Length: 170
Image 1 (tube, one colour):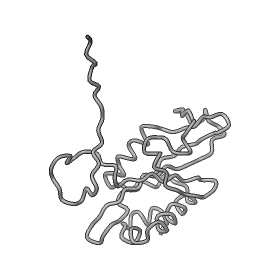
Image 2 (cartoon, helix red, strand yellow):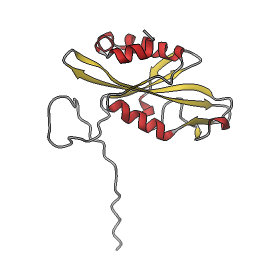
Image 3 (cartoon, one colour):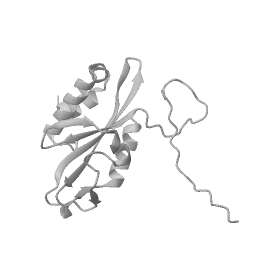
């Protein structure tokens, strides 16, 4: 009888609060507990959390074949996928990492454009507490700022000036 080969898998170890000081098993493991994907519809000027985006399965991405060349999707509707990481410091919880990735979707031809490496790298940067929002258009920055403030004003107030200036051009 033939033995089945054991497949090597990637395990994401979930932990409730990576800031609780625990230094045992799983230290240094990738935790997605405190990151949320926010999808911004540029034309509609709307933002919403879509956890499906963690696995490229957001409502916007479902049923779409993504291409690597933007010009191959000339009528694509623009979106920003924003990775938002929450952490805690002396002041309390705050938006620690906020990074934006551009993508377009043309529902009619079921095609879209996005750079998968950029999406993965930006999620990683968000987890590492970076703020990368300079690529965003001004309207989308305001939509994101309003969304983050409206979602939780305490988190917004505790966040860095870098984030607030980056989104509000203050």
